[in-house]
Image 1 (cartoon, helix red, strand yellow):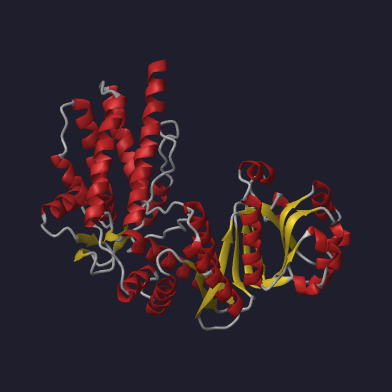
Image 2 (cartoon, rainbow, N blue to C red):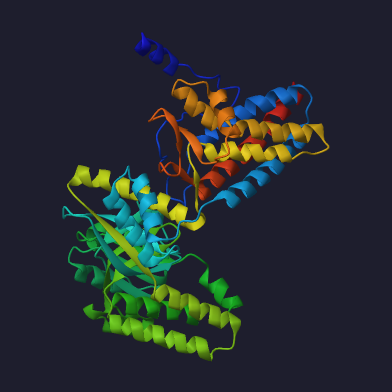
Length: 487
């Protein structure tokens, strides 16, 4: 009987004309999976529930005569107050033990994963880069490599994959050209020296004729070699016309890249004196439509250190603020490091392990940046209590404040209802308690200290949830009100 009722309930859908949102779902698990913040917005499933509550509640208020603009002003004021409360309640995550505990909880209590993630973050700092890669070995390892990030990208989307719009080369050869490539012979010679290794061509520009030959004449050029071309994403001629020192700074960056990768910078005068030693390499290159990341350059470490010392000396001697800033940026690029987590195992096991590592890594980095808060909707629940102090002289604005206040209670009540309890009663009981960390754990069926039980949410994720709710509700209210007035 229970299975039959569940199958019927799963087929229930709200009318699509009432609100353009997917049906909300909330899973009663300790930790919610976050996506990469670079990036892509993280979400904890709270926003869908809160949006649905606010939309239908606000729809009734608008039909009763409440002005949508005043309603919007009310819940925006409430949103600012909630954001202030969340910032004040956040607990910082700084030490190795704290980061390891957060990562362990995010990795489903896998202490080994938590320890590796904590080591990776501690080595490069909160602003450093951390990647996960597949490894043929069965054991998981951590490696520290130098990296450089340039805002150069391919001139054509044909150089990247259609779905991901990225291009990843392992152990590629690198050809650096400081001017516009107008001679196809240079690239042909580099392809001939590649010997089935990937080839990355870094150039100040590339003529359309040469680019067309690279893309179309594959039988003559590729010879089993995968290659990619990147160049600056801005118009160099325009930039050079308004900034005379632009080309000199660009060439200096290429020299830094050549030292990092163990290559030489090819210019127009040296095209006929091409030698294989001009090509450099690195462990991995990640190309996207906006930037390129060089990981683990094969350049001489002594040469890299010497270059860094030259930049430090130039910074001390320079008196121009813009020049000092640019030299510091170059020094940071050349001395930057990244932690590479090598996930070992067979193909299926490796993919599963990499997913666990990525989840733990993303949550740990979010937590380190701004701190953590009690999870399972407890932070939002107690934030709603703070809105009792926020009152305005306008009735419509107060209605907007009350609307967000009720929506903040929905995650906790939904989790409790899914566990078979009365959701509103659980939420009211938790609000009456003095302990703001007390919450209901459906996996244990009892009230626990959620932080001690490793049930938490990063502050950055909750802020993203709140901003998503306010933005979408504001948009939906205006659409609904305009349609209502048209009728």
